[in-house]
Each structure stands twice: as structure tokens, then as C-alpha cells.
Length: 208
Image (tube, rainbow, N blue to C red; front, side, top):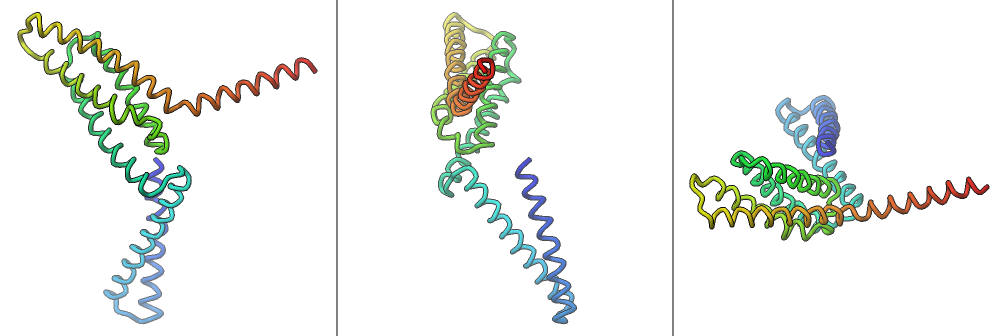
């Protein structure tokens, strides 16, 4: 939503600049229609770029990021998005209801982590274990399970591997839940603090 609104804001600023530039060039400086149009489009382009730069600087300041950090986070979030898409594709090939329920819950947690870090990029550094280890393991295990489960005939060895993979994925879900807790730890601590203050205030009012 934020990106959409910033694009709208850039366009709303660029269009008046383009119109004003064309009018001044055509009527005040008596330039040709074509030349005035070229200048108007150039002015709109410059205005759009300037406003984009201003919004970007404000974004970096708001989230306390450097340009290098922002690029690094964007790259890794783009990679994570592709991995999440790979997990979603596996849903189509899973028939086991019990495992599907675990998958839905795991994907819900993964999406939550991704949404939080997309909205507040600085939190990415609190979830480095998730992005550089646990997410990769989840994708690998889930795709491995889907491949083995799709085999028409399964011997005892395959069934054993499926069982172990299921257990591993459940263990990964616990780890990823901890990743989410770690990413939200500052909010949780802040909430605990506010609750303590509220309880103290209520107790003080009762005593008075």
C-alpha cells in the first residue's frame, strides 16, 4: 500500500510540473509544440526522479538504514519470496491431510516473518537464522517429501524416509516459530513494559 501511495504521489506531482513546463515553454518562450512537449516530458521525468529520491531518503531515515543495507535486505527478501513460492507449489502435490495441516501452519508462520520484515526491513537482521538457514532447510525438506510421497510404489525404506522427513519438518516449524518470536522480541518486551506500567498505575490508584 505504501509503495502504491508513493507512486501516486510522484505522478500527482509530475503531471502539474509537465503541464506548467509545457505552457511556459510554448506561450512564454514561444517554442514549437514538439519542442515544448519534449521539454515538458523532461521536466516531468526530473520531477518524478527528484520526488522518488526524497521518498527513498525518508524511507531510509525512518527505518535507520544505509543504502547498502537496504539493497542487501531487498536482495535477500527477493530470494526468500522465490523460496516461499516453491513451498506454495508443493501444496498441489500433497495428499496427506495431516501433513498438509502442518504445511499450512508452517507457511503461515513463514509468511508472517516475510511480511514483518518487508514492512520493517531493519528487523531482517533479527531473523538472519531464518533467512540464511531455516527457510532453506524447510524448502529442501518439503520438496523432498513431496517427491517421495508422489511415488506410485513405496517400499519400507521410502516410508521410513518419509516419516523422518515429517518429523524434521515439525522440528523446523518449532525453530521458525522461535525465529518469529526473535523478530518480534522488541515488540514483546515493549508490551511487557507497558503492561507493567499499567499494572503499577492501577495498583497506585487502588491504594490512593
